[in-house]
Image (cartoon, rainbow, N blue to C red; front, side, top):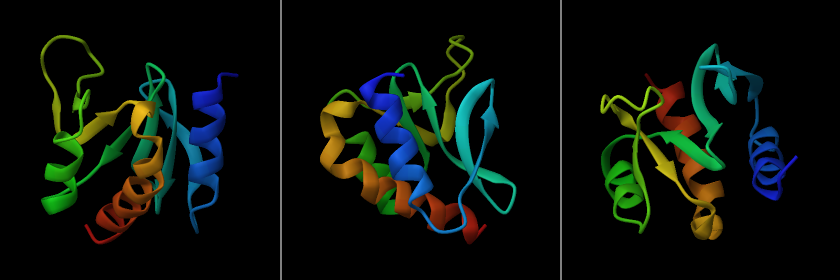
Length: 102
């Protein structure tokens, strides 16, 4: 297990009511059956809206999540590299809130 995957698991399991699962064959966490964070290509991916979505996309190296690799990104999902480790917990928490409120 990579350092990044260990961090993903530690950050996600610390969130109240987060359930470990799979999304596109990759590890993810869900709240009430809905995915809010996943681990893909050694990066954390978050479902975000509003200002947090904009903030995440403004970080260097981030991109919209495109699991198919066919230029069909998922508009609400932002893939953030671990170079922004200090912000990942905040985005995980905001992602959980965002998905819980939908």
